[in-house]
Image (cartoon, rainbow, N blue to C red; front, side, top):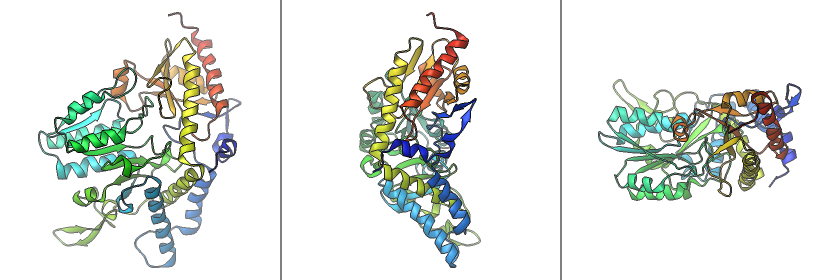
Amino acid sequence: MNSDWAKIRADFPILKREFYGKRLVYLDSAATSQKPRQVIEALTSYYNNSNANVHRSLYSLAAEATELYESSRLKLSQFLNAPSVEGVVFVRNTTEAINLVARSWSEANLKPGDLIVLTEMDHHSNIVPWQLAAKRHGATLHYVPFGADGLLDLDDYRAALARGPKMVAFTHVSNALGTINPVQQMTEWAHQAGATVLVDGAQSAPHMPVDIKAIGCDFYAISGHKMLGPMGIGALIAKPEQLQKMPPFLGGGSMINRVEREYSTWAEIPNKFEAGTPNCADVVALGAAIDYLQEIGMEQVAQHSQKLAQLAMEMLLAEGDIDLFGPGPGVDRGGLISFNFKHVHPHDVSQLLDSEAVAVRAGHHCCQLAMRKLDVAATVRASFYIYNNEEDIKALQHSLQAVRKVFGTYNG
């Protein structure tokens, strides 16, 4: 296992960039991670040496491309301990994975009056698809609230389960609060109530060991670009029996068995859900990203991100003009911190931090329900990954002075 963080940082070419004469301090990995040279090289190597359409031809180059493509499916299955490699469906991102389920599973399972349980901390990608599904099928929605501590109200969750929902969908790690939800327990309770379970793993798969078999959920959705892979590739990891009962999401080449004039029959899973020419090169590069993370070890990845988040929290708590959101000190959280100056709009904070070459996200983070619950329009979010270090936390602290220089000190 490689935990030489300085050596790891050196693998990321973009971190050599400077802005305004200062080194780049990239603190927005919750939005998208940077890419190590090993992933970039895997992407270019595919196009330089192995580019061909997969699953279609018998010549050697196409067979090589297919082998590379399918080897990444196996790597991802093993990386997340998926129920079966056949249950790994490649899509563009977490959003498409959830939309696939909300469209296809709902078509086979939802009827008027059925209940779908979500949470107030969910990303829009795990809200809007279910709103659309509920409208199509006449279902209703319930949102589990969270408290001032950033934790879900599990009593409300149990009460919602007592109403017999058909689908329960929730995030593993909140992208706005950093909350790590007890997904294994929540899944067990939901199954006891007869519900199907989808977990949004966009923020968890990159940052901690994930064991989908142990979690027990029916569907788990991820994005490759948040875990060192390219943009435009993600996956739905599902129990095969669920996929086998669902109608196709998209129609076209590769997903068929036989096409007649009036009907078609479908290919076996996962091909049934991978219509058309797939994103072969990015799938191969995602495999390289998985190799990179496994060489480090996901336990070390988790410890590193959480250590930096705790250091940032301690630093921000000492600042009298800043409010923090989400779980407090001593509670395990994802590798991100959301905060606001008491007297400055988050967008202004982000722009002023940018003048110090510190890149943070400011906005509602595609979590408008959570922002309303917090009674804020937006927050500033600093998020950390394997290439960040304590110097980045110090740079963040120093950059806050740029805000105070422009807007003055908070007088209460």
